[in-house]
Image 1: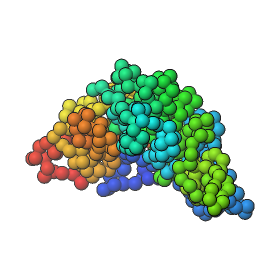
Image 2 (image 1 turned 60 degrees about the vertical axis):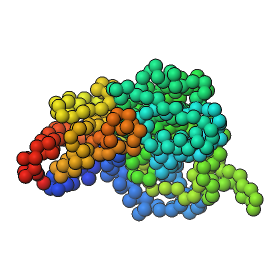
Image 3 (image 1 turned 90 degrees about the vertical axis):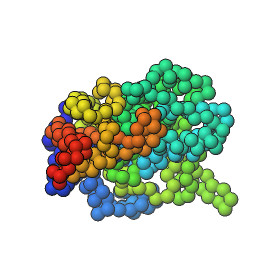
Image 4 (image 1 turned 60 degrees about the horizontal axis):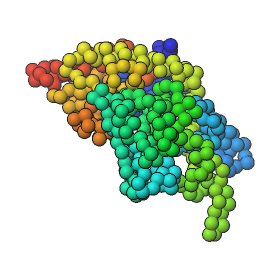
Length: 417
């Protein structure tokens, strides 16, 4: 198990106060906080060996190149990739998915093909496929969810067919916390010759993920949700698939030779990394991977399961709240969406903020899911390695106060903060 007290000392922002109250940060599904080691890795790069990579023969450039590629090796090992060349740096999960849409999908999805997604997809794993389907004459199929917020196995069997060319699905829903059975779904899709893209934005930071075990063709994830900086993410592609993909962006670094009328492409993965890359943040993502590796991803997952179980048990005591997603913590991540029919989520979020508690409110980039659930938005608390039961207790206590305040006008004169 994790030593959460010791972990919290590694995160300087957790010492901060908001409106005079100790910060309780429960917005980890949006972005995580950063430990000293990640912050220091950025300082070390800019103070010690700031230079462009792959191009210079001087000491700074070679050191930067070594650190940059070392980070790629760390990320590859972290997700079980067979070789580092199968990991492409991107800005985030959204760009990684779009890279697949504009390269592999544009070339391989034809009229009459079907692209299958789930009802719980983030817009980033839905809108690109809408465009591919429209441009290529394909059909977009959306697997519905049950009232418990999980996929119905009988539905998946009827949606994944011989017409399926691509299954694009999240491993963990950012709005419900649902953990989807991506390994078995991948096996079903492959049986029909389809490729599988897994949105790992909410899974890679929180649980062991091994692309060889999952056998997925693509895995996309972001650094900023896993203790790393913003502006850096990664796309894993099976080597045999990647070899056949055309470049996404064209220009510096991704070329091998250029003539006035033609060009040839560099080897992998640089073929997909045109221009000066995000060197510092890639290196810092490597530092984040080091931190998580030292904790052990099995331990990270176990901590979140126990904390999620505790949080659900406490939130269930607030009868005025509707909770969403599976109640079995083996089927969900540390994402806790809730809703009250009389109080808008934004009002709850603002009230909590005045007490130092940071959560997310809104549709969470899943508008179709919200419509399917019959609501406009939810309030969402999300947990990570540095969160505690005491913070859950504070969330629950302040939520109770907020609901009393908004549903009883006589209480408003005593509004805290």
